[in-house]
Image 1 (cartoon, rainbow, N blue to C red):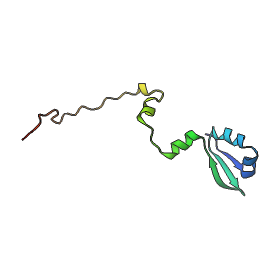
Image 2: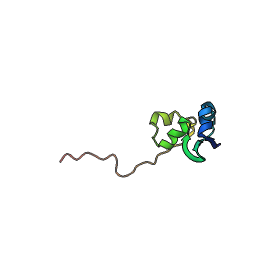
Image 3: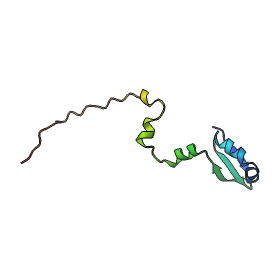
Length: 85
């Protein structure tokens, strides 16, 4: 990850440069030498936003078919007959 820092003047003069830099990492925009804003790619924002992915998105992830999953068997009296009394 590459962190880029631009003054607000540099940002205003070349927004395209800031957008290209945001693909590589966060872009800090400064006002009078102090950080005031951060530009992120939408992917990085979504990671930080914490919004969980849907099961469809998770199953569509590359390599999902490589994951081994063997749930433990439940042996606590299942199945048991229904009690209708």
